[in-house]
Amino acid sequence: MLLQRRTGEGDAEEAEKLLKPYLEKYPKGSIFLFFAGRIEEIKGNLDGAIKRFQECCEAQQEWRQFHHMCYWELMWCFTYQRHWKMAYFYADLLSRENSWSKATYAYMKAAYLSMLTEDDCLTFGESAATLFRQVPGLKQKIAGKSLPTEKFAIRKARRYLAENPILLPVAPLEMMYIWNGYTVIGKHKELTEGMLATLDEAQTALESSPRSEYSTDDQCLISFLKGLCLKHMGHHEEAEHFFTLVLCNEGQIKYDHYLVPNALLEHGLLCLEQGRRAEAIKLLEAAKNNFKNYSMESRTHFRIQAALHKAKATEENGVHTPSSP
Image (tube, rainbow, N blue to C red; front, side, top):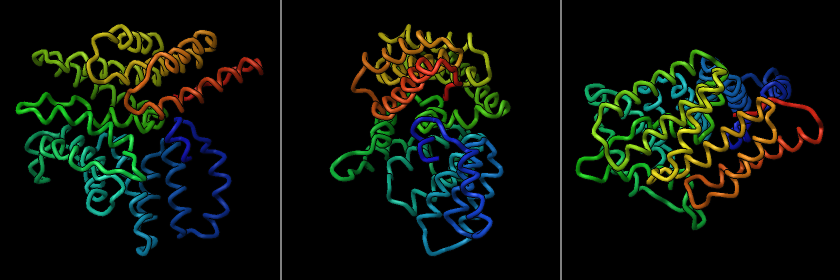
């Protein structure tokens, strides 16, 4: 279940079998309630997951760490449902109570506010632009190293340091990809369709805005995320079209260079899912070998290696297995 955050894969059915006797014996056990919530989340049963995480918080008050773990998952569950206000609520709780990554929490708060109207933001007493500007100053190091998610958030937030910043188009949806959230929504058509509708709205807004130094990057991001949604909806040709759009604009991307190797990765996974193994391996090898020094590189390489292992295992066994997103 923890691996699912890294590769997008998770065997929920097996985990559920293992957890069942413990949950029956300790129905109020916080750790078991938490993992029960994670199982429901991986399965895409978001209402069930939310219920379990809330039960976990109610079960005990001594170990606040369990509350924070639940807040993090609740934040993502409401993100998948596009309930931006509730997602903001849990990001705000984390920013107040937990010190793991103040920069990430501030970024997520700003990301959710960026999806609301100005009037809605007044309710929270904060603005997206102000929070984005705070992100670089909240950077911290653990064991002498910066967290990859903080580096990513800081790079994305830098555009808000300008006097008249160009807004990030779909900040929560982008971070959702970093944490493998499309694996979850891909299990439910209505969630994926809802996310695609949000991307269509962002596309319309981008097309009606004056061109800027970020226009190509923002267009490629929207295209990439559209490709993911369409892949999960079974519209494979359209998905490939959008992944290819990203690759065709490689030379024009100024900041979000991570999009190109990830477009190759997702295109490769799509080919693997369709049984086009040789083509998949070619795309995955290109993603692995042709790019370096981009955001979240280690996480992307982890997923590439998992995909290559699956592709080569399929070849050896002569058996096709569906790929994970």
